[in-house]
Each structure stands twice: as C-alpha cells, then as structure tokens.
Image 1 (cartoon, rainbow, N blue to C red):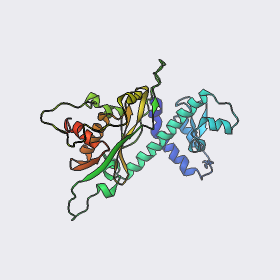
Image 2: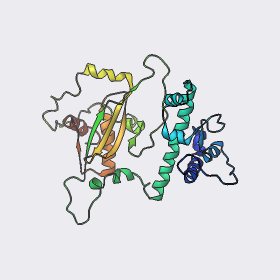
Image 3: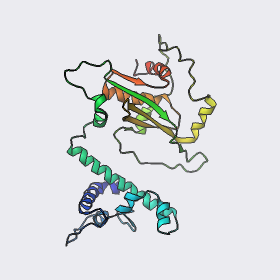
Length: 291
C-alpha cells in the first residue's frame, strides 16, 4: 500500500483531469500530444482506467466500470467469464484505490472551503444543534445526543476454527469514525465499574435492569471479530460519532470513548440519551470522566 500512497496525490490530479475531459460517456477527449507520466497508473487514469498494481500493472479496470459495479461475480456474469479468486483480488485492490482517489478529492474540496479544521464535521453537521444565535437566551443544555449500539453488522472471527486470521488494514476515511486505538484507549476504558466511596446509583432501576437477555446468550459474541457498531447522533438524526464494537457486545469502553470525545468537542453542558442510561450513569460516575 505504500507504493499507492506515494502516488495518490498525482492520481487525484489525474482523475480530476480525466473527469474534466469526460463528457459522460466514458470517452474523454484527448490532446494531440499525450503527456508523459512518472507512474503508469497516472497514464492509465488519463485514458480512463486504473491498474490492479501500483507500479507494474498487468491488468486494468475502467473508471466507468468501477463507478457502476462493486461485485466481481456480477461482472463475470455480464462478460460471460468464469469467476476466479484472483479476479476478486485484482478488483478489490483497484476499487480500494478508486475510493482513495475520491477521498483525496473530498479533502481538496474541504481545504478549498476551509472545512479542514479539527472536528469541523462534528461542530457543523447539524446547524440547529451546534450553531449559537446572537442575542438569544442560553438553553439549559448546549447539546443533546442519543447513543446506542447495533449488532446487525457482525464480522466473523476468521481464526475461530484455527485458520490464519485475516487482518483488515483498511481504515475508514471518515471524520466521525473513532478508530480501534481510540475505542480501547490503550486499556483505560475497561468494561468494569471501579468502586468509589460514597457513590450510589443515580436511579432506582440500576440493579433491576436486564439488558439483551441472560449472560450465557451474550457469550456468543466471542465468535465475532466485530459484533456491530456503536453510534452517537443528535436529535435531528445526524450521526456525529461511530465506532466498531471489537470482540465483544455493547461494552462500557465504547460508551466511555464516545462520551469522552463528545465532552472534548462540545463541552460539559450537554445531555445524552441511552436506553440503559440509568445503569450506565453508575459506570460513568465511577470512571475517570465522572470523578
């Protein structure tokens, strides 16, 4: 991937040039003299293709195809070609760079609009929630969000049957996505309540709540590398933060990591809704964020 990163800025410029010359029929106009390029993929993009390798591509996929399809088996069916795993590897490598080019274009837009300052999407995603009007009385809460997890996006642990683990090195190029390092916070966010003297539950239902069934049923999450996602959204349904739930169900460390980010960006005068907020308030109070 390092060879791709060395040329990604040049590929972004090449794609913008291609898009300027393309009239929508994937047949861009060409100058009389074809320009010379340092990298072969820049030359390929000039003609409307992306190679399957960064330096010495032996196969290339058209930009028009990448924009229309993301399923290798569907492409094989349309071209009456037998499906092979090597085709999936080639297409995946090319499609990753295709998405990386679009991310580079998005970064250029943000820089031109001065939207590349720290935490800009969180501070501007919902004007109704995060913009303050002049000469208006202050509200009781500066911000309101709701948080919850969902286990519909499970990712099976490839090493559960003794096979070699399949490591995914890709990171989502998103402004509201907390990466794995921040989720776990180097072990500081543990899924346990630290005993503190003089602390009592904020609500009477803390000891009576039963979340998502018995503990024996929750142990099934250990077979998944990722069991779902955990998000925070404003009350106008704009997502402001999200993170993967790694090797677990809905643990306290994900909530604490998101709350820590919310307090850092928005300040302490806010409100947060959660379906088991009464139980989580005890964990939050006994954590380093509540002390």
